[in-house]
Image (cartoon, rainbow, N blue to C red; front, side):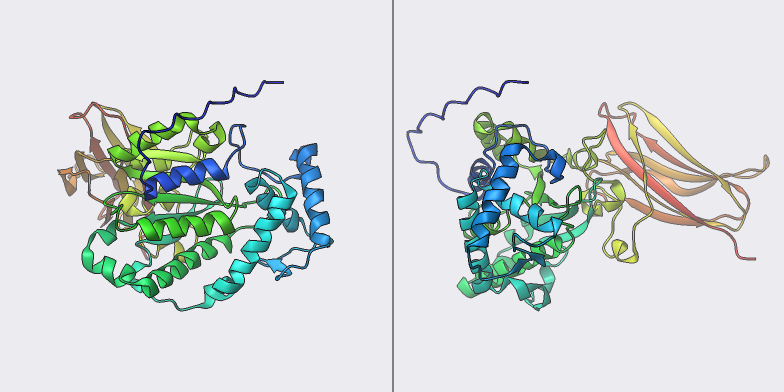
Length: 420
């Protein structure tokens, strides 16, 4: 059996108190909600995976619940009665236990206070509420698709509040701030409604937080309130938080905190600087994260607004373009009169791209569909279509010979055969 890592000594007291900001709050939330010294591995909640200590804590909590009168008999549609023959009850109770280091009494207190908060906040009816803020939908915080393991993904981007007019419309007074908090809780509750709460199932979400242009000082009050609400009332519901477009000072702050975080805590955070967003979100090689067809176009994916409403998207093929390399993607077997539609994206672009159609006939003429051009780093994926006049193949050219950097990429295509 491996020995537990040595206890890290507490950091020395600073000569000046650290000013509490949104970023320090994030780090503080991590250190207070994840104290386990073990490396992070998402709980499966399978009975066979529970240690004797965990099983004992769960049973203790159930015993306490049996003699406690709660304000609610269920939470998120899951019965809270310890006598309920429902696997979801155990999953839910284990989340509260994990959040309180498997202390049954503390977990019961957290659950009781959370149910009281839901009463006062009217959280149970929030999904049917028309809170407004339509201009924030799909921009500031929104659920979109899932990761490679089926976790629903919530995207957060607060850069729009850099514009003073937008900030005043949303946070101009206490009443507006309260309405925003309700709206943000509503987004989270939508994500929770997608969870299974069953052993071995999908029981948590992924958070992707875009720090680009985020006004730190102005959002301090709102951010701290959101963090407090989530920390106190939504235990162990986030499998991983991926920070993207991370500014240099965040990286410095994280490096300061990092030595004093447990491995489990650090494993729940992913830090991606600007320029590394696409390769971070795509990740895999069993590091997992998100497939390109589920990543929004503004983050280097192929998912455009409304795409996922029609059902699961067509999977994309992923590939890499090495530094100094030119890649030609050939789509063969296209009939005359067929229409081919394609999407392609390269993380960080800054390379040359073009598209041609080459007829199968030896005496055919190659047709330039998209003249080779330089694509900047900020451009979204290419989406185009072409109807062929004769059988042939489409050739998509990606020229990275002017760069030493390896880049991740993805493409997909649809062929509509000619009508008779």
